[in-house]
Amino acid sequence: MHMKSYGAALTVTGSMHLLTLGGRQLLVDCGLFQGNDEMDARNRESFDFDVKGLDGVILTHAHLDHVGRLPLLVRGGYRGPVHCTPPTAALVETVLLDSARLQEDGYRMDLRHARRQGRESEVLPPLYEEADVHRTLALLRPDLAFGDTTTVAGVKVTPQRAGHILGSAYLLLDSADGRLLMSGDLGNRESGLQIDFTPPPEVDAVVIETTYANRTHRPWNDTLLEFRDALRSAVREGGKILIPTFAIERAQVILYTLKQLMDAGEVPRVPVFLDSPMATRATNEYFEFGDELIPPVRDALRAGEDPFRPSTLHVVPTSAESQRLNRYDGPAIIMAGNGMMTGGRIQHHLKHHLWKPSTSLISVSYQSPSSLGGRIVTGADHVRIMGEEIAVQAHVHTIGGFSAHADQDDLLAFLGTTGRPHVWLVHGEPEVMDAFVPVLDARGLKGDLVPDRQDVDLLGSGFPQGRPPGVVLDGVADAARAVGGE
Image (tube, rainbow, N blue to C red; front, side, top):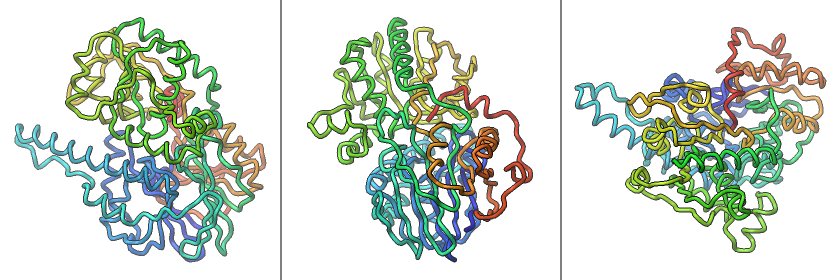
C-alpha cells in the first residue's frame, strides 16, 4: 500500500491523496488550496501524475479544500467515476458552482481594474469555469452508503460516518495488500449539529487528519456561554455584528444556536441577515438528510419545523441587497462567507465596518495564520481588504469551540478501536503533527508525518521520530492554536 499526497501534506488544506492498492490507482479527494498567494499558486500547478490513468476517485466530503480541484482534474482528461455519498454529491454541486462563479466574478473585476492601469496581461484567468463544473458533476456517482461495501476498481470501499459535515465519511479500503483507513475530516464529538463518528474496526494503516491533534476543544456548554456573552456585548456596542461563516455546517450550527438563544431569551432578538446564497442553498440539503443530525435537530425536522430559522432571520440573495446592509442603522447580525475571510461577501462588510469601534467581529471558524482572518484575530491593527488599508478598531471575539474537527481526545478515541496500525498524519500544521507523534508513541502506535508529494509505503517503517527528511518546524502551530477552529 503506497500513497503520494498532493495536498494536506504538512498543511491543513488542499487534500489530495494518490493511493496505489492492489496495483490500482485511486485518488482520495481533490481539494483546493486555500489561504495566501503561495497556496493559491499551488492550485495552478499541473498534476504530476497520469490523470487519465486513474482507476477511480473517491470523495470523503464536500468542503472546497477536499473537492475544489475536481474540475481541473476533468480539464486534465479524467473521465472516470467520482464516488461519494448522496449528501456529498448534492453539496459538491453547490460548492463547485459557487467556486466557479466567485472566480469568474473576481477575474472580471480584476480585469477592469487592470485595464485602467494598462496591465491586463498580468491578470490570471479563473482556475475553471461553470462549464468545467458541469462536466465534473456528470461524473459524480453517489453510490456510497454508510456501512455498505462497494467495489471500486477491484478495491472494496466501505464508508462510515465521520461526523464532520453532512455526508462526511471515512473510508475503509480493502485490497490484497491489506486494510487501509482514510479518515477524511473527523468530527468533534461535542458537535452542535452532527452525530458522532462511527468507531472504526482494526486496520493495517490509518491516514488521519490532525487539524487539532495538539489540543482539546472548549466544552460545548462553555462555548454556548462564551458565544452568548459575546453577542450580548456586541449588541450593547450598538453596531454591526459580523460573523464570518463557512456555508456548510458552520452556518447551520450558528443559525440553530442563534435560534435557541433567542427563543430562550438569552440574547436580544436583533435582526439576523444570512448574506450567503451558498449557505442558503446548502441549508436546504439538511432537510433531506436530517438523520445524520443530533436528535433535537433531527426531531424538529421530522416534525416539519425549521431549526435553522431564528425569528428575525432575513435571507440576502443578491449583491445589491448585501451592499444596502451598510445603510442599516442599529445592531444587526450579519453572517457572510467565507469563514477565513479570504473572499466572499464578508470582505465587503469588513471593509465598511472593521474600522468602526462600534462593530463586533465574532470569529467562529478556523483561521489559517496567513489568511486575512488569521491576521485580524491575532491582533493586526491594519489589514488590506479589496485593495485598501483598513484599520482594525472593531471588538474581535474568537470562539473556538464551534469546531467541526476532532480534537486530540477525539482522535485518540477514534484510533482506540483500530488495533495497532501504522498512523500517517495529514491535514495539520507540521508542529501540531510533530507534537502528536509522542502522544501516539505513548499508546504503542507509530506515527509519521506524510511528506509533500513523496511516495510513502504505508506499511513501511516510516521515519526517525516521525519526521520526513527536510521538515523544518517554525512555530506556526502556536498561531494556529490561537485562532479558533473550523
